[in-house]
Length: 228
Image (cartoon, rainbow, N blue to C red):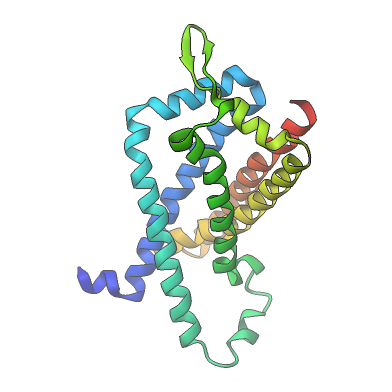
């Protein structure tokens, strides 16, 4: 088992498994975030549920571990591939057979990680650790809960800085979509759930999923700036 884990195939396998796990998480996270489009009460109820549900709380460290494993194996494999490349590898990579996203997965991953850190500092850290004056409790249908909507919507709509953060958020969504457009079907191929027929189908699904996720996240700051 240890030999498999340390092998190149093993690293690709675990990176693919964690990647597919994160794909599922993104869908759940996006669904929760889209409640912002339905007003303060809707988002506060969803945020309260996500923050108090015991299953969600157990999954948070598992999610963090998934991110860490994905990043570590992605870094190791990228460095190994760079060392193993012949001098003319770049010419091969520049062929029409490889998409821009597939040739820049690690760079896209680094950009997504940078955005994720900024996102965590502005939202998760304030919700879970430091708090914020904006999180003053509100009552929704008889239940007291933090006003997470004020914190999130406020960051997107706070004058010039809100526009800057909104632009960064949209850019982060685009980077995420590009990363998913290759990573989604590639993960299935790595674990052996792909062939010539299913490769084409999975590629289509990957593009549709990437567009849906990127578009879903991007529409949030745009909507809040126009209608909140």
